[in-house]
Length: 130
View 1 (cartoon, one colour):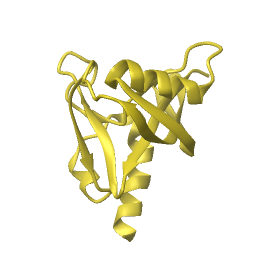
View 2 (tube, rainbow, N blue to C red):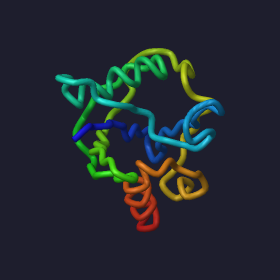
View 3 (cartoon, helix red, strand yellow):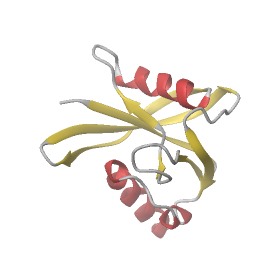
View 4 (spheres, rainbow, N blue to C red):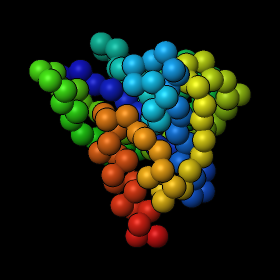
């Protein structure tokens, strides 16, 4: 099954999210940046590569936050969300329209792309407990 990776990047109580470009599939919706794992590539290395390519940021993966399967029509993809922190680079929006830092409570004010809904629901539920 193909894999997609994303990262839960936090700074204190804030979570990093980015807005997809207007020309992208699911235009202007918000996401936890990431992308497809290449054949033979370790998934934790894939998320580092994706952050570098998309945002010019270096991240350190600190563990797996959650995983799930996203099904759409006749295909399925495993989606892995790693916990990570920014350790270098200068933020450049190479593929995104915008970015922001939000609390778990504020996250529900943003329309997140469907493959990441599982993570969104978990994070919002955690925010409601705070």
